[in-house]
Figure (spheres, rainbow, N blue to C red):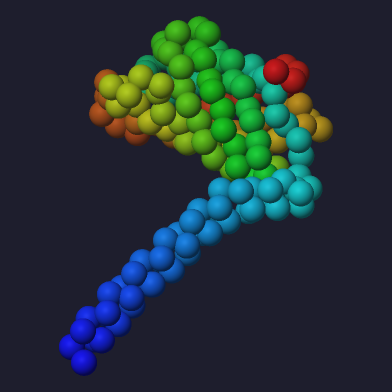
Length: 162
């Protein structure tokens, strides 16, 4: 009888582990493949993928400084990724990685420097206007120099498919 219970216990644990593994694998496939595929199939919002020229006006100094950026936006369903390069301004040469979403003409992006040692972080919320040719909005960012969160103005103009 004791041998039977031991075998039953081992089979139960093994069966539970197999079921958990299968559930985790199916969940991973569902979240990474099926949902993005479905969102892309039913996506009925604006198409804005491509290269954008952006100007962000920073408020953390007495005189408002502006940075010029080149941004390459990619979209999969409502999920957006981007890579931004500062072309001119206080962060010239820095590269930023962005992730966010786009729904109902509103783009929200969180950005971090590609250089993982930098403490800067920020967010942008912008509305798509002028028949899909321009984003206008505002940002908030943490400046390690002042150790405060500041606001910024943001405007990006469509440059074409990249």
